[in-house]
Picture (cartoon, rainbow, N blue to C red):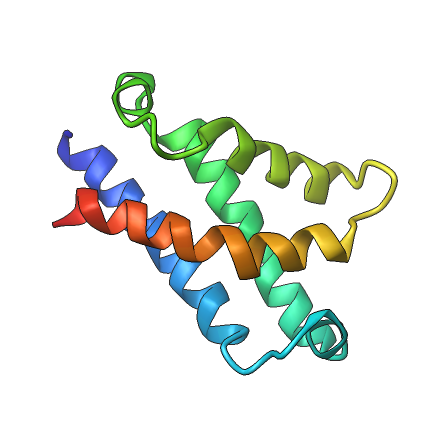
Length: 112
C-alpha cells in the first residue's frame, strides 16, 4: 500500500469511527431517527466514506483488498447523494449497526 492509499484508508477509518461514536448510545432505528443532527452527521460521513472509496483510493489497492466491499460503499454514497426514491433510514441504520463494525475491523488490519 502506498502512502496516499494509507492516508485515504485512515480518513475512511476516521469517518467510520465518527459514525459509530455518534450512534454508540442508540438502541434502535427510532432513537437514531429522533435526532436530525445525528442522522445528518452519520449520512454525511457515509457519503464521505463512499466518495473516498471510489475516487481517492488506487484501483490497484482496491483489487488487492477484496475483503472490503468497495462497490457497496460507493453505492451507499450514490443512494444518499442522488436520493433514489428517498433515503431509506432502515438501510442507513442497518449499515451503521451491522456493516460499519465489520468495516472498522477490516480496515484496522491494513492500518497496522
